[in-house]
Image (tube, rainbow, N blue to C red):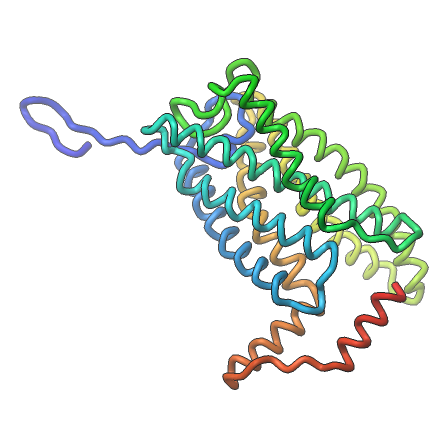
Length: 310
């Protein structure tokens, strides 16, 4: 309530929108979910910026996976920023439809890059030949596939972009499945690749380090698997359980886990990576002495030879 007098009461209402709206098939909004969304996305945006800087300037991790991680972070970064600042821009119908289409495209792009991450993991651990996916093909799949889906969706039912409550896909005529359908396919494929990857990884760990304690191997494998599971987008599976108003647990789990996906990526591919930590240490030392970091030619040569042998 803003004011109250003899002529009546003047009120101001702030609409609540959480990250769960991306896959909700009904209305379920609370102040707590909105707060979790705002805090989680803010943390993720900061972590994604740091991750992109790391992937672009860290020399020791350059390669196909680094390209995939960079574009995954870019897609999530722009998607999260637009969601955080534009999901409730319903006062302008044209702007709202543009925002909805951009969100649709960016989150589909992020899932395509997650699928390419799964494919690269499969190639690294299962295939025998040391082949590399060309960057042109990666960009074509990562950005071309969402573009095709957006064009088909807009041509079929362009009114589905933007609703009266938020700038996202409409539930009318099942238009929301233009997003949930591809997401479901990618999650199923990545889950299959994940199971195969864990199986192969367990075999390699037992054969390469038989002297390592069994408990330590299990702990390392579990931590790595859970972290990689989040990166492959499997946490989004909680969205498919939000099919009734009696599932607040899945709504909160979906919102918390997926708003913090940027933090998960930064921790797994930056903070937990030994070579990246070494680069961070080098950068911090250089900043402390106000000079450019000095790279060792011997270590670079050694890394190149090790990579070629692998």
